[in-house]
Each structure stands twice: as structure tokens, then as C-alpha cells.
Length: 465
Image 1 (cartoon, one colour):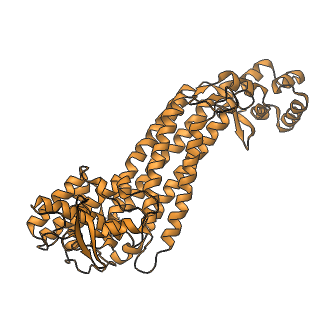
Image 2: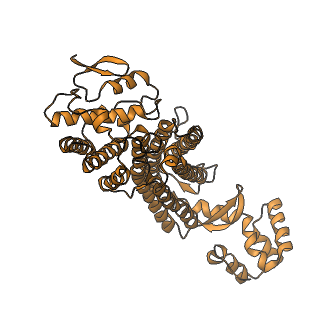
Image 3: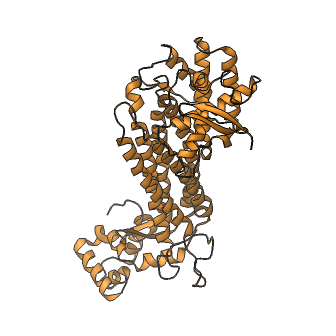
């Protein structure tokens, strides 16, 4: 294998000639083999890094801090990367020491080498265009990396929102399809009062629909960046006008409403927006897990459980029990939710671990937020397309449960009084007779009155005695 020799603070190393990265990226590869997940696993992060570097080059060019030909080469190289070029050269592990320096240098080196070739030079000829002096000019890992990370999370949130909207629409469609089906509602797994299966699914849809707005709120917080703060927020080694100019260019390149933080020292160490976004993902995960639990309960059986709905059969459920079909899709959604909930704790601890003017644990935060966003999006699409859209109602089972339930006695309280209703409920429980049969026996209501009170319209909506 042909190599080229590159040099850094610690000495020289041979780097594969075909590699677009350089010595610092290679050292990071050697040091960090923790997750096996490289930056290239998240193209959103690569594209965001390229956007930050392009914005920085433009601002430095405008301020006379970077020669126009270098800025043009860097900008063109960033555009290539944003269009998908050389993503496989972003090789460092997402989890790394150094507060993201390895990720930042991976970007600096790839962009520098690509820009060198555009200028007619060989990879590694850093005297012509340098990863640190030129690509990283007016920047530090401490402002470039978190700025790119914030953008990457905003980008990752968009397909997640689309997945949520798709599942919400499917649940709403089922609500309409099941609007006429009476069933028994339950609290604490005990019979409560009647409702329709449509009302149950409509509640699922409304509950989930709230989450898109929460994601938007969290993304707005992430769009406040510290680019230009350099090492700790004081702006050392950057032109006084660089920060505002770079952020304006970043808004143009990214298409996102990024703005410069009011206090760059505070913004460099603060992880509050990341914690907020993580909590939004956790909230969504909790709701999705509860939805999956409900689908599993409502479909339990098929003959000895609730059995009020039937989930689409996706695969045989047992290697020993013939005919068994398991709710594998909701189960997978549950497990995804548990992972996201656990990741939120990791993000919380990492955010708390910041010290003084920096948080060195940012790589763990970024890894978990990007990974959780992707996992949730994929799991939601799975739940939507491979489960919810194919759910069927078991109308006969819903009717049987409703007819046999003591819970319908609640509808009679305004008409026969609480004491009579309690006595009838107890007799029904002890004798096995239905509530309607006992009311008829005691002639507490006429047949017409009983039919009116127990009509679908009366039982699932507010009524006046």
C-alpha cells in the first residue's frame, strides 16, 4: 500500500496515499474504537460540518483573512461533500475524547485535501492549503463542532417529524374506520365506561400529534449557535466582525434560521438545548411505548385475552407452538423506546459533566441524539406501515365485552340513583346476570328508557338525566 508521510505535534506517521483524511484523523482511528460507529453513519453531521467550514471560509474571505483562491477551493470542496462526496472518509468513532477535536480535524483534513486537488496539488501538500491554518481559520473545535452538531440534529429531526405525521394520519384514519364500534373503556385494567373504538384511536392520534410542535420548539433552541466564539467564547484569533458574518453565511448555506448567541462564553459551555431536545425525544418515546402497550393489550389472545383488535400477522411467533403469532412490531417499538429513554439519561449525565468553559462530553451527547432520532424515525415508520395500517377491529368481541360488562351501570346512575346502581352492580357481579337483565327484573326503568340510556349515543357522549 502506497503511503505519504504526514507530521503533527507528536511526530510523523505514514498515511495511506488514497486517504483523503490526514494524520490527526488516523491517530483518532487508532485511539478510539469504542462504538464501531463512524461519523459517516450520520450524513447529517458530515453535511453540517461542511456547511460550517464553507460559512467560515466565506466570512474569512470577506474580511480579507483568507486568500480568495483558497476560499473558493474550500467552498467548492464543502459543496461536493454536501452533495455526498467522500462521506466514507469521515472515519473517526462518534465517541471520542477531546470534546470533538477528532471529528473537527477529520473534516478539516478531508476538506483541505480535496481543496488541494482542486488547486492542482497533491494530497498532503499542506504548505499550499492547510487543515488548521486555512480550513479551520477563525475557528476552534469548541465552536465549529457544536455548531455543526446543532445543525445535524435539526436536520435529523425533519424525517422524524415526517414519520410522526405519517403514523398520526394512520391512527386518525383508523379512528374514522372504527367510529361506529362500541366497546368498553378501561381504567386500571378494570371495566370503566363505554366508548367507541374510534374514540380510542382518535386519542392515540391526538396524543402523538402534539409531538411535532415540541420538536419544532427544541429545534429553535438548537439554532442559536456559538460560531465565532473560538476556544471559550472570547473570539480569540478571529476578526471582530467574523462571528456575525460567519453565522449569516451559515444561515444562507444551511437554509436554517441560525442566529448568534448573545453571550458566546455561556453558549460554549451550555448544553441546555441538547438536554431539551433529548427530553423531547424521551417524551415521544414514552408515548410511543404506551401506544405499543395498548395495541398489545387490545390484541391479546386471540381467544383468552381482550381480542378487540387484530394486528397484522408479520411472522410466525414460536418455534414450538404452532399457529402462535406475536405482536412483534409493537414489541420492537417498545424496545426502541427503552433505548431512547436510557440514552436521555446518558445525555443528562454528559451535560452535567461539563467543567468551567467547556463540556468535553459533547461527543456522547451528539451520538445519542442523532442515534435516538434515527432509531425513533425508523421504528415509527415500521409501526405505521407494518402494524397500524393493517389493524382490523373485532366488532363481535367488542360487543360481547360491552354487553357482559358491569361498567355500563355508570350510564344508569343519573336515572336510578347511585345506591340502586351500586346494588345492581354487585348483584350482577355475584350472579353473572347482566346489568340490563337486573334492571328489567326490578322494573327500575321502562324498556324504552333502558334502551335510550344504553343507546350508543347516550353511552359515549355527555347526557342530561
